[in-house]
Image 1: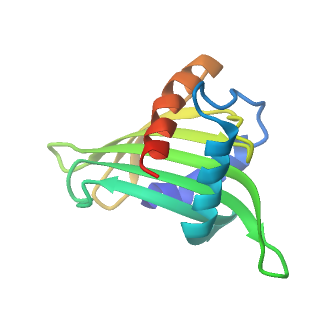
Image 2: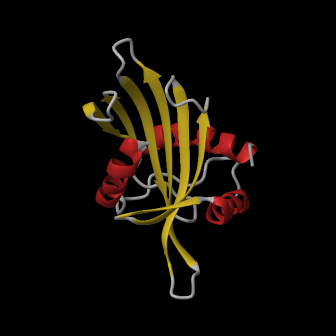
Length: 165
């Protein structure tokens, strides 16, 4: 999560304007997507970054973050107006597999899916990270996904969230 808080907003600022990569996956309706974004806005935990206000739903399994675990975050990013209403700008989904290595470091397999409010994916990334116990990044490998790779990786992850709503 430390990496998520500090690096991800900068990454999305840098690449957020990239061309669309893919529409909603087959079998996911615009109504389902709309319901998901509304749920995130209504129930998400608020945090601030350079990119704006993040309203985030998270799922960490198992909840013990000191052992190998999966950490998934769905966020709607935007800002609050003068009247207190939230203005959504985009959706960001981050899926992380955290594996504790024998030397105590963490190997993190991270998938980044920024999308428009309408559900169109923007430039997506697969990141492999190694962090030490203090959260410092030791290794970092970023791969931009093709439209096909993004769609294949995004579809099952999005469907899993929709099934649990």
